[in-house]
Length: 246
Image 1 (cartoon, rainbow, N blue to C red):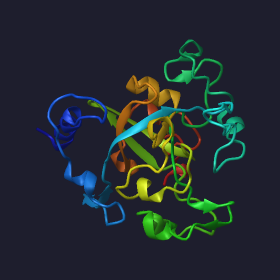
Image 2: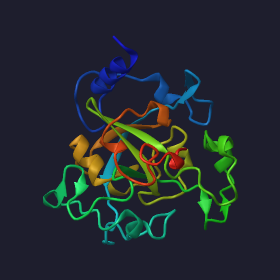
Image 3: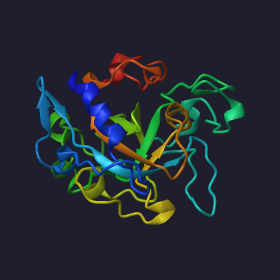
């Protein structure tokens, strides 16, 4: 059996926290500290899995609520996020066609996620730990205040279904949790079931995911991103715009 098929089978039987489905299976790579050198495959890094992370749904243009006071018309890295996307990424299934909003064709990749860490401060400087904990930081030698996190690809798995998306915002509820994002600590956030990743409506629909359910996720290099609906749209998408490649 090819190694990729075997691992997808392993993820299928891995229990998601809060569920009782089959025996407990431990993936050794999930417990390797991400600050260590990632495993290499053909000279390309393979990053460790984060298992059983609570996922919540968010969307570009989301209005603030009592449960989530942060509006999503802008992101941690893009003050014109909604405008640059092309409009409101309506999560209502009746307002969507496939993985896109019916009202317009997005100008950015509709497969996006947020993780609770921002590597820069006010677009002026990097946080002190950024160069030490971000595995790919040294590769880019970024100018002060230029993020190396935005646009990174993430692989998300649940019950044998796998989706790919780009990291485009910071949250939920935290932008300093490098111990979770790059190490093997649980999320510091305790709201919404201790949510550790926000996913877009496109990711939700592709995976058949409900807010509050558990997923496994890890960073991936673009060489390990297969073709799929996440490759079709967006000026920030290197499959569409090679200049966006990271």
